[in-house]
Amino acid sequence: GTPPYTWSVIGGSVPGLAFDAVNVALSGIPTTPGAFTLTVQVSDSAGLTASRPFSLTIAPAALNITTARQLPDSTFNTSFSQQFTASGGVPPYTWSANGLPTGLAIDANSGILSGTPIAAGSFSFAVTVQDSTLKNYSDRFTINVKLPPTPSVTISGLSGTVPPAQQFPLQIVLAAPFPVDIAGTAILSFSPD
Image (cartoon, rainbow, N blue to C red; front, side, top):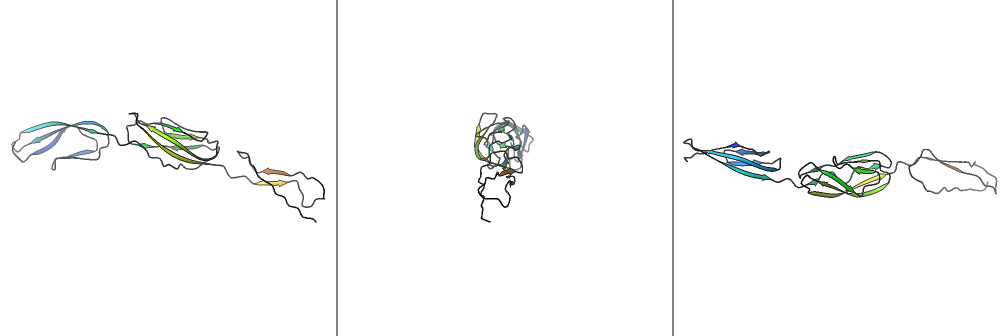
């Protein structure tokens, strides 16, 4: 042909990429994985044209869980919910978890960890996400399940002054129910009148 040449894409596209006719370059950030075909045409100054198809395969980004590894604290016997998120791979994703605190479960389709924890403490557990091509990514996460504040304690049944050599019943009462057993020591001191 006779220069100068004029370039153009006459068929196909790649999501996120643009064709620069001046620099004869395809550039950008691809947004969708897959196999794509572009047909590029060149025209010379005499009006002659030639075209050719080009194939381009965009691989998916690496599969990854994007949720922070330390989950927000939860309270014992109180409803909890946390959305897990992933990036890369080829959606849709499937979720699973091992070692969760009793009372919590992860929804395989939505990635929502929810339930009512009935065990207190700090728990480390594994979450795995799988994409539609059966690629897996696993990571470890931590959640702290805290007990609610201890209710106030009232001690009754003993007056300020008592005669010697007698037994006196004491009653220790919590101001509200508590979800687990409480163990402790009551220390009473006496002095002679």
